[in-house]
Each structure stands twice: as structure tokens, then as C-alpha cells.
Image (tube, rainbow, N blue to C red; front, top):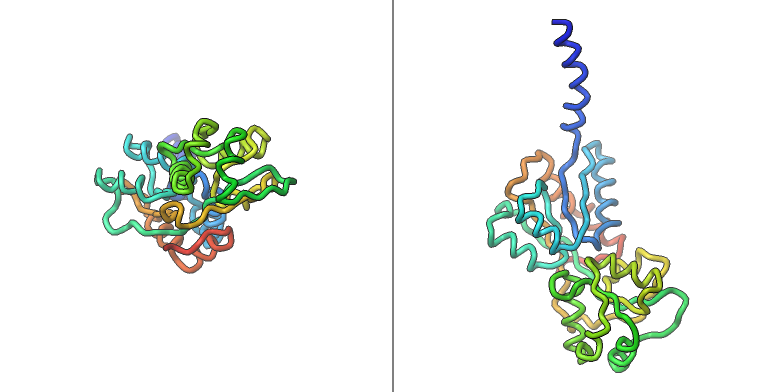
Length: 248
């Protein structure tokens, strides 16, 4: 009996730790700073801090489709959330638009060149252009559409350096591996090593929306509460503080 009690005492901290683990959130790479701030705000209320995992929305959606254990998914576009919805992987009634963003062109900090629609094709075709994969990653898809509508894609596409996500594209510009990159405005704001060299007209690409949803297989008791927190006035204020736009 004494030996059994000793084993139970040894296992108790593990059980408590498991209970205190927050919900697992799969979030688009562009949300790193704001989601960490939201998780900190949640934890300050005395609740278990969510476990955050960041990658391209396309990669995260494929993980969910493959059965990866998670509770919430925050995508950088509607289409990857749609892909999970059609497979019945979202909890009914849990999908909502969390925030919006703007698409910009960044260059290494210290320069002063500014791009306009008239100079876009000529300037971007002169050197490597860093952008998230335009065939699957939301930031890359938005960027390709914008360049197509502005008549610059044909001149630029041969110079594109495809990154696995928007933060990888940002890093290429930060390191000087590319003179320009296409990222979200909030990504540029998060880096001291780049500056905004141009802002794409909002009409040049579909509206940038970040939908959030609880996954159907989620069993964490705090998952729905954290989703509601993100959508609450307090949660939206955190997103606004980091430069995100209200849902459109």
C-alpha cells in the first residue's frame, strides 16, 4: 500500500501538468506576435496558456486533414478554412472572421525608394522578389493576384523566390538575399530590418481575412472559451494594437 501511494504521489505532478496544458492553436505564420500577446492576456486571467504552433496556413490545414491533434485553427485566408469545412473538420457554428490586413512591398531598412503602380514591373523584375509560395500560401496568392491585376506578374514571375511562408519571405529581405519582398503590413511592422516601399491597393487582391474556428475533434475544455476571447472586445483590441484591421 505504501509503495502504491508513493507511485501516485510521483504521478500527481504529471497529471496536474496535463490538466493545466492550454488548448493547442494552429495559427498562420503572420500571427506570431499578436497570438503570443493574446495567449499572454489569456494566461493573466489565471487560465492555462494556449500552446501555439505557427506555419503557412496551407501547411497547417494539411496537418489538420492528416489528423494532427489541435483545438483551434486560425488561417490567413478563407480558402484553407473552406477546405477543412468541406471535409467536416470544423465544429459547427464556430467559424468567424477574426481580423484583416494589408499587403505591402518591403525593402531593407535604410533605403528610400518607393514603388508605384507605374514602376512596379520594372523595379521588381530587376532582382529577386521574395514572396510566400504563390500557388498555395495565402500571402503568396494575394501577392500574385495583385501583381496580375496591376499588369506586373509576367515581368516579375521569373524573379520570384518562393518561401514556405510569409515570415520566411520577410527573412530573405532582412538578410539582404532579396531587395524586395511581398508580406503583410503587420509583418513589416514586426521587423526593424525592413521598411515599407509600397502598399498594394486594396482592390488589387481579395480582402485579406483571418478566419478562426474550433476543430471538430477538439476535446479541450478551454478551446471554445479561448476562441470567444479572441473574438471579444479585449481580443480584438490586442489585434488592433499589433496593426491588424477589423474584420471586413
